[in-house]
Length: 87
Ligand SMILES: [Zn+2]
Image (cartoon, rainbow, N blue to C red; front, side, top):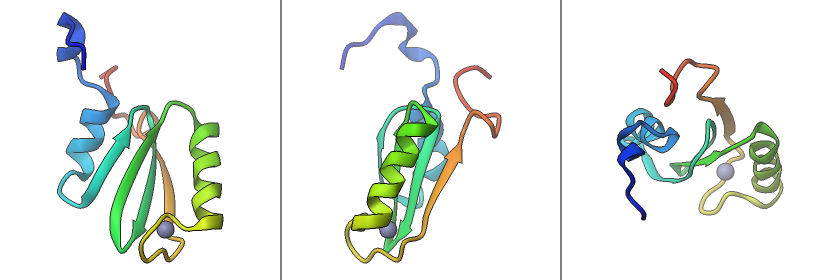
């Protein structure tokens, strides 16, 4: 990971970490759109656009997200909730 002076700014990843670190098994990716899978354990993937998040969701809706999937998948728009680096 390349550290630049601007790295101190909050990222979507750090925002997601703050929100879900205690519950999530892992948090991957980076972006304002979070795809949550509340299956067995909570896993979170972050996406730069809603389209990509929806694409990923339809994939895990169809093929399982892994483990004991009960199709409990949810998309959360962090920017819409007022979180993120811009605040
Ligand atoms: Zn699932």
